[in-house]
Amino acid sequence: MTQSRRQFLHTTLAGAGALAFPTIIPARVLGADAPSKKINILQIGCGRIARTLDLPGFLKHDVARVIAVCDFDAIRAADTGQFIEQFYAKRKVTLNVATYGDYREALQRKDIDAVAISTPDHWHAQPVIEAALAGKDVYVQKPLTMTLAEGRAVSDIVRKRPCIFQIGSQRRAGAGFRIACEAVRNGRIGKLRTVKVGLPTDPGGGDMRAMPVPPNLNYDAWLGPTPLAPYNEDRVHTQDPDPKKRFGLRPGWLRIESYCLGMITGHGAHWNDIAQWGLGTEDTGPVEITGHGEFPKGGLWNVHGEYHVECTYANGAVLIIDSKFPSGVRFEGSDGWVFVTGGAEKVTPSDPVGKAGKGGKALDASNPDILKTPLGANEIHLHESPQGDHHLDWLTAMRTRRPAATTPEQAHRSGSVCILSWIAMKLGRKLRWDPQAEQFIGDEAANAMLTRTERAPYGALSFLKKI
Image (cartoon, rainbow, N blue to C red; front, side, top):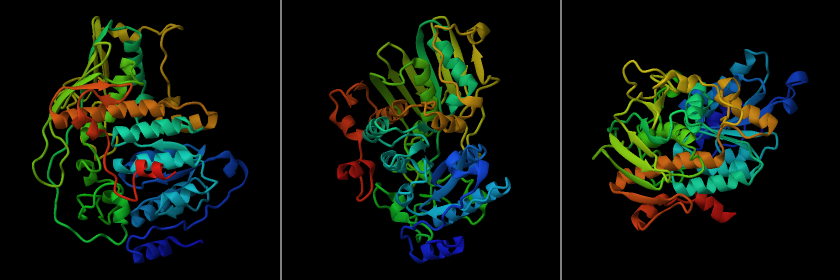
């Protein structure tokens, strides 16, 4: 059924949270812009990260068309559909964007080739699995999942499908990060002994008072597999009518452990991914973890504050993650060191920034030759993203059917380091980890934290039990 965007909003608002169905059938264009020559993308999640990072990253490349969007907030979905249409109109492309409130309806469309998932962390695993099983290529924001159990399921399923996968670890596309990791992997700093990662933190606080659920928000679906909780704008995202605030302000869910584990996964998914890349441990993990963290005693926002974590690997290298370190990754070996960072760079305008250090360079080493010595033909050459562009990397992989920068298993393992660190921070004791079995050794309490109870009818693991 074809409806205007106004009709879509009216119908959804009247339903007070009922799932919306497809409203606009995409227009077909001719010639060089024929759909058969473009990658048709469904955007799931139309909030801050989609509007300020992912959609701009996809839209600027003419090999793809974003033809459909989905969000549990009808206003955000409608506004994003209009945003995309206006973008294409300026480039003389006529396209009507289909607007959905339920991504499962969109996944049934044969003309959708790929799915980009820019949702809150607790809504990553299930749509990734469902999209892969529906035969779609998948891009998902980091971290891959909220739990180890979800991550293992996602990796196993996606790897068995003819699915081109990419995760939002855009640091890998940067030449500086690749050069740093290649130097380390090829022994330019001797035997690698220590890797130091610095991350920012989040403050406590947040309004805990219950508020009426906005009629444009399907709040039960937004909560998904997490426990029922009173609605509050500080729990979800702003309903400010100003688009700059609606799509620019940092949402409160990032500071609540039901939906995000805090900066240990928020920025840790970036830096720990680079650490694993340099360590050469992308398909495994540490064997021992110790840590402690400060957690707010009251208020709505309960993710960690200051913290210190140490992860020991089988080769003896130690990854130290500390909120007091400069933001970035420092590799220290027997013959020198390499430091790489984004400095004061923000992925989105509302991101917090860690300690950037004084006078530090984005890419630095104890000896300039460490970074300048050319790689030999028989040395390790890491994945190089075309034009240093993270989103183009995924689009190119889909066109060539060759792997993108990060595999599902690598994404899972990088996320695992973050989750294991969080568990160590929570328990405050030394934990022994078997990276092959993905179980803690002799610690039932820690193993119980590798998964979470899912609220019916939502959840990736619950979904898998039904198929």
